[in-house]
Image (tube, rainbow, N blue to C red; front, side, top):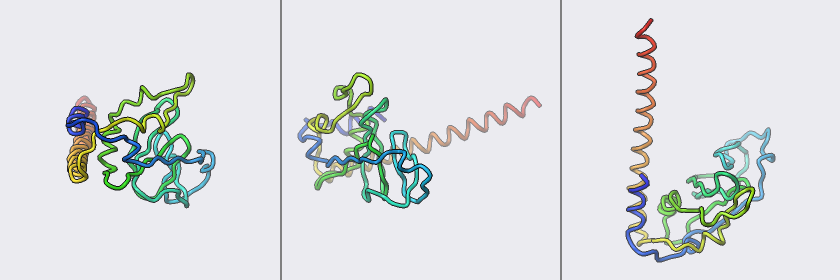
Length: 178
């Protein structure tokens, strides 16, 4: 997938800065604020969904970027109503840009050169937002994002099949020697 994504997203010269494609937002929420709270809306942290809350802070598709800690630079695409804690930035697309296209671009983006901090690594949007990226026409962005999404779905399906076959194999081997 990495090679296909690289090929699809790097067809031409970089022509726009990341900060011109997305708006960067952050939160001051902490994980402890959601202890013992139950609700319908996911609360995201560095490890994924950490809680569910009855309230939400964001109601649009976003790219979550881990900005602090060991997993710094890891990205996740989220939809709908949600909240995010302070270890994450959430990026939203500006007009004329496909958020899904930018998500695929950031999945293989090299955040390493933007890491700072000796103990706990950090990245700052003010730094990596200046990176030049290639963005074709919006129509082409949607086309590329749709193609990469289809490949992602196929890979997920193949992984499910592989896991199922592995379980069947374990079952058969276990029962073979009874």
